[in-house]
Length: 408
Image (cartoon, rainbow, N blue to C red; front, side, top):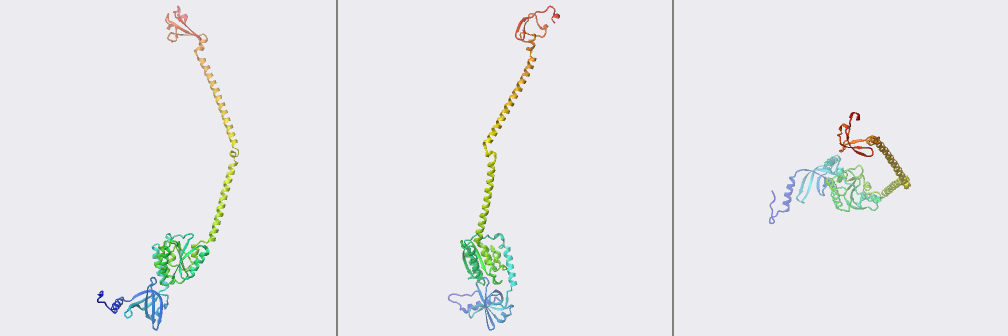
């Protein structure tokens, strides 16, 4: 039940501590994991400061010296351990501590198993997918560098980068790269650099170390912070054989800090050589193209139609004259053939014409209406007839003959 108090009837400190101690005592024994920040032995008692590996909080642990020495191997400062302890609130001093009953060192195998489970979980979310990784800028104006204070990694990155491109600039964030404060400091520096519009790429660099030393760079919070960055991130943690989870989520993994400088900053000498090589290739390509065009132009100019244009005109004129003469000859021959045909037809018509018969002494007898008289019996006595000759005609009156048989 909550303690009923008022400003007029407050409770003493001892009562509050006693009630809080009773509540803490009811928690029972718990397993607690952390990293030993401090370790002191006084007589038969050992005093430890156990820090959270992620948050900047710690708790005091008290245990018998035999409990500490019973661990295999006995833990030292910096070691990760799990403690079977009973929470205790000292009402006399108002301090909270853990009374350790058993201490176990966290083995490498267990750490690797935890990291492997975390790796599979993050991979299933797609944080390590290749399609989400961003390309590095060709020549960043400002490089963000997260590294340890006065570390060899910082010197390696800056020295090699300046050697490759002297005008490169750095914005350095010096942080703790191991221990309980590493994750928080690296994450905060990463957010500051990512928010800076002048920073075009971020390098997180650290020298080699044990698996325990590199654990902050496999922290889930840091991995998610890198995945959420808008600026490309280069991971240069440890050596070639070290692969913290930061290497998997980063846009580019460098095997060493020196390799990070090589990947981020182009070599000015190499770029100048490349420019010279490209200029030479372009010059050769242009010269080859010009040579081919000059050859084509010379070939075109050497052709007769371009070498002597008037000659082609004369040739066409000769062709036109020849065709005109052929046409005239053909037309004249056609007229001659037509004239011959007309003469032949005329001769045939004249041969068949009645006028030719009349010229031989024959005459045609016609009635006044133009009908031809074919027999004498058809003529009536006294009928007026017209006799047509070859050149003229005569009108006569018919008389019946006395002997028709003789007339016939």
